[in-house]
Image (cartoon, rainbow, N blue to C red; front, top):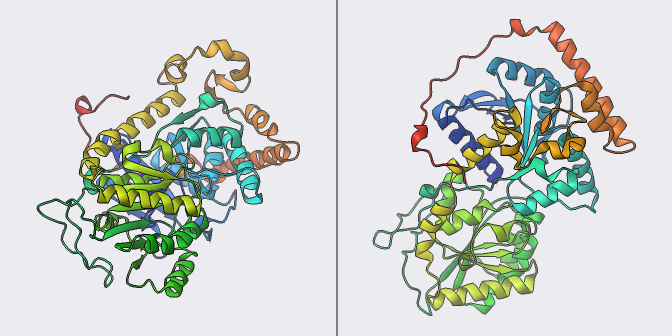
Length: 484
């Protein structure tokens, strides 16, 4: 697994990589993670069940993404891959430089590759155009792509000009046991962390009266695309319309200053609590203090945090954008357009429903638990690995007879459905990426191949020590559920 985004930084991509890796290890696979260093965390670290993480010391450019050096990562990457005897390289996130470089180098080394897209991007602004061109470069020579929602799949297919058969949809999941609602008879105890952040006990699960205080929770990175501007405009109006309500906001980012200024200007210090950044293991303790979870994102491929909120027994108010409508059933959510007026109205509707006791939030946890499972995600991802490596037939993997479409597949693939490693075939795929971009991409691939040949001569494979595998537990496969 390769990505710029991993623990100790909190987030949906980070959690996805960790949970998927541990479940694949439970099924008997060897998994390592490559990411960049975080402050004093450099080198090799071991996590649960011997999950090994390589924190490579590369310079971070923006929002935890490393500087795109293209070729300087190759010697380190090759050394790690040979030491660990890696067969498949799985990259995550469109904005991860390490991910794109790892897929390029892995194909040059003759390794199978998979890419998982966790985000949605537009087609008009300069940043999206450049990101889409970079994605087209990387995915021109990838074996398979995974998206976390059907909306994400449509977006990725258009951005990278992919054959839809090469893209699978495997959603995120949640560890429901880590996001339990407070017990009705035994409310969650008070937590103390960084001063006042968790100084209040979680509210017990009970019916709300007309004058009881309703707490609205927001846990998000405070960036523009997460709807922080929308949240800043909506909070004063929500609090004005509903006197017995308050907000708890957790997260950090450049838009935090706007929220703080809004609180000062409207004198809302007693009704809006800013917690700042919190660790992932503290998310549940914050969520169970509330009744409603507000998610004002402007773009979202999946939105794992709203699944976690529902699992904690919160009624979810969210914007109807991206893949969010696919995540939870309608009785758990109130949808709003990504507009101030509609968000205020949707929040008011949720508050009224809770006060009238029309929503059975105490049932949400068991329902979410039955819908989402990381074990199921691992099984479906394992099937992708089997498909790209030829362990299962094309008819079984792609769900159709590949020979019927041989003209489109066999030109650049050794076997229908499996990418060819031949340099000439790779150059053909890259050359079709654009009049000028195609030539530049071909040049990058040729340089990468020459660097690979130099590394093979200067640092022969037989001179690189291989790592001993960590002794780890595995699950009894007879007890594992089948793939849906």
